[in-house]
Image (cartoon, rainbow, N blue to C red; front, side):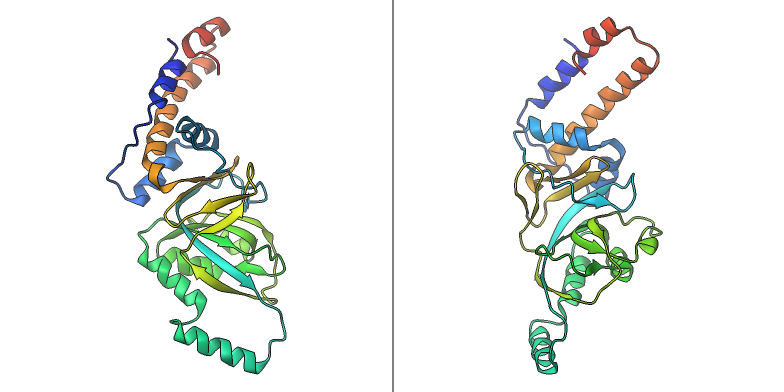
Length: 259
């Protein structure tokens, strides 16, 4: 039996293991061992598919790894030239609901264990930038470790200087005018999918993104996927060494099976 066959046999088990670790530890382990293909293969071995997001989500810079616990946010676009009366009414409503929606979102970030990922459903609105560097700095200071933005970001030259805030978005724009308002915080949302029209994002699901794209890992199987990803990593590291050393082709397929 090849090492790949042995690994496939292990992965055919449907046992769902749990780890007693923090999300920051999960993030570090996924970043060390994980890449898009191994995450996808691990979920497929558990019968989970159709959780790949649309290729419209692009990293601000190649090499970014977006990993962490989803904190879904829903927005509603606004139009300009809103009347003073409308502004007064909406501010009174916000005050009754506990403050400005963005402040409520940041409070929610602060209540989460470190390692959250802001996931923005912008309702298809692509007119303004929906998030900028100062908001990224505030979120990061309270434990957020990146963003999946179905809209535009801005201030990217400063976002890129942050030590650990990977951003995957639809694009960039300089203008904040036009505007939007947060309508729901930490409630399920839908984001555009690759194999399905939408991927549902539930609070507590896990996000994994790299150069190959972004995927959702359902919250109930995060640790099992991590352990399978690490098993793939160990086998493939041995394989890489032997391939680089010039292992004969027939021997490659005898030992490792189909690559």
